[in-house]
Length: 588
Image (cartoon, rainbow, N blue to C red):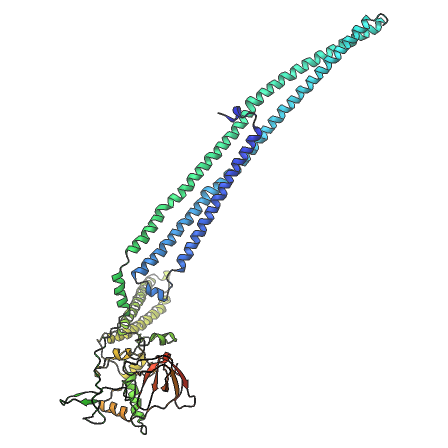
C-alpha cells in the first residue's frame, strides 16, 4: 500500500498531513521540556528541603544527633538528597536523549519535507505546461481545419460561378490548397504534442508523483517510529532510576528500623546524669517543744532528753534559715569579719549554674565547673581525648620532618636540613604545650573522679572546680535544689572560697549578727506556699519588706516582721526598691 498509487491526486492533503505530523512531534518535544523542568525544580526543592533540616554544625542540634531517632531522621534527609539527585538524572536524560535528539530530527524532517514538496510542485508545473502546449496545438489545429474548410467552400463557389474569371478561380483553388496544407501541418503538430503529453502524463502519475509521495510516506513513517522510540525512552529513563530510588527508600526504611527507644533512653541518662546523690529524708520539725540550749550560746546543737546532742532545727518563726539565710538576733551588734567568713563558707559549696544565668551570657569555665560532676567528667574526658589526638598529629608531623631532615643531611642536593630545623623546634614546643594542657585536664578529671585530693583555695579560685566538703555531712545537692523554684542550681563564682568554721563560730554569727536593713517593699502577685527550707509563704496581694535583691538566681529575700523572713521567687512579686536605702543595688 503506497501513497503514490492510492493518493496520487491528494497532493494538498498530504502536504497538510505531513505538516500536522511535524507539529505533533514538536508538541511532544515541548511536553518533554516541561517535564524536565518540573523534575529539575522538584529536585531543587527536595535538596533545599533536605538542607533546611540538616543538622547545623556547632549547634544544639549536633548534640541531639546522638539519638537513634535523630540519626534516622538525618539518614532520611540524606536519602532524600540522593532521591533528588535521581530526579536530576531524569531531567538531564530527558533533555539530552529525547528533547535534543528530537529537535534535530524535526529540523531534518522539515528540510526533507520541504525538498519533496518542492520537487512535487515542479513536477506538477511541468505537467501543467505540457497540458497548455497540448491545448494550444489543439486550438491551432482546429482553427486551421476551419480555415481550410472555408477556403474549400469559397473555391467551390468560385468554380461554379460562370461569371468569375479563370484567374480568380485558380487563385481560390491555390488558397484552398494552402489552407489544407496548414491544417495538415497543425494536425501533425497536434498529434505530436498529444503523444508527448500522454507520455509526460504517464510519467507524472505513475513514476514521478509516486516516487515523491513514497518519500513523503517514508518520512512520515520514520517520524512515527521515532516518536514511538522516544516514548519508549521516556519510560526507560524513569525505569532506570527506579532501582536507585528503591535503594533510597530502603535506606529510609532501614534507618527507621534502627531506631532504638531503650538506647535513646540510655543516651538521655548519659547526657543529663549529674552524679549527685538524691536528697535524704527531711527531719521532723517539732514546734511543740521549746528551744533550749544545753551546751552554750555558740553551739549549733540541741540536747535530747537522753543527753545526746542533735542539730538545731530551724523554724520559720526565727531567722535561722539554712546557710543562705543569716539569723538576726541582736540589731545592735555586728561582727563584720565573721560575716565575711560565713559568706565564704556558704559560697564554697559546689553549686551549679542555672540555665537562666547561663543564657545571660556567662562564659563557660575552662574546667567545665558549671556542669554537674558526671557531665563535667565526660566533657573533661572528651577534651583529654582531643588533646591526645592533637599531640599524636604533632608527633606524626615531627617524625615526618625528622625523616626529611635525615634525607637532606644524607643528600644535600635535595634540600637544606636547616630549613626544617625551625619547624621541628616549633612542633616540639607545641607538643610540650599540649602535654601541659593534657596534664591540667587530667588533673581536673582525676579530681572529679576522686583520684586526687582537693586543691588549696588559690587553685580553687583559679579553676572554679567542684569540691566536696568531706567534713560537713550536708547533702549539697538537696539544698541547692531547694534554692530555686525549678530545681536548677545556682552559683556565684566571684566568691568561691572555702572557710572551715567550727559549729560554735557558725552559731555565734547566726545569733549575734544584726538584721539586714530594708531596701524596699514588694507586693505578692501570686500565692506561694514556701514549703522548702529557707523560703517563706506569702499570700496574693500581701505587702512585705525587701531585704535582699535577686542576685541572678531567681530568688528575692523578704521579711514579714522582725523575726520572719525568707526567700520567694522573684517572678511571684513586684518589687519597689528604695533608691536611697543603704545597700540597695541591682545584681545582674
